[in-house]
Length: 329
Image (cartoon, rainbow, N blue to C red; front, side, top):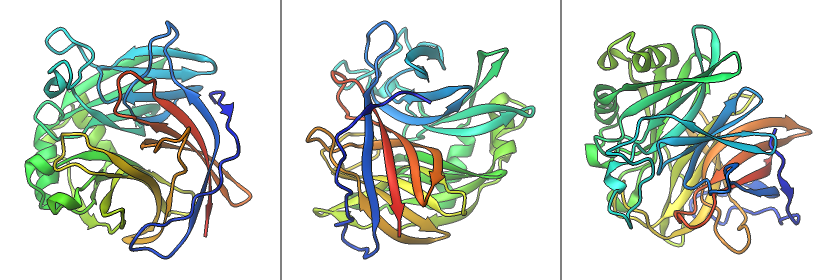
């Protein structure tokens, strides 16, 4: 567990999301600005999953992840530098080079716990998978190219390659449900496919052909909109009762690569193919908290306890980790 400073009790946020009448009540119970042990900021936090006695946080603008353990935040290399760079930005003209790791999902390698990280697929630089496991408490990292699998996912979802933006995944036993963010402004609804976890792990490790990984059960979701901007999936987790919680952002952008103004962040409760309810995430310090990564801490007395990480799309600000309490109707 990572210590989070106690936030002033935020008022639970009701949905106010056009297209849904249910309620998901969300409160922010803790906030922590994330900095590495040397003081440099963790930026563009895009995904989070448990690793050992802590949490692994992916940065979508970097080849390096943050390993949160107690009060420590250690840097963990996931991929080699790209053209000599480990960090990428639009301002520096290097955004096109970034691997854009957007998914972190619990997995196993040869029966041992691991974290599976996946690129968004939005460009040909963003089609790699990474596996992180511990050997005697020391992280071991393997990476593999998965471009043929991404092409297959785009085909199954009937999404053009330049609109593929795989930003979230939830684990369901031996299956990974992999979510395409979607963009209503471009006519692409949020969607998902199911992929066998073991086959995906083998492809990353080079034990199997990425083109041979089965892709099945395409789904699309109606998450509604806020202020005329459609909500799009940024991550997903499975709940103990089999339902899903999706994080979503209403970001006004024309495509799968460029950032845009974010008018709201939300959580959606999903059962099978049906979106049951959507609730807005409260603002933090007067700003929309663009939740891009979710991890389940537990469920107690009917309240879901989540660890969420926030990407402000601002390299000058450290990313934040939020403790969210969610009451589901």
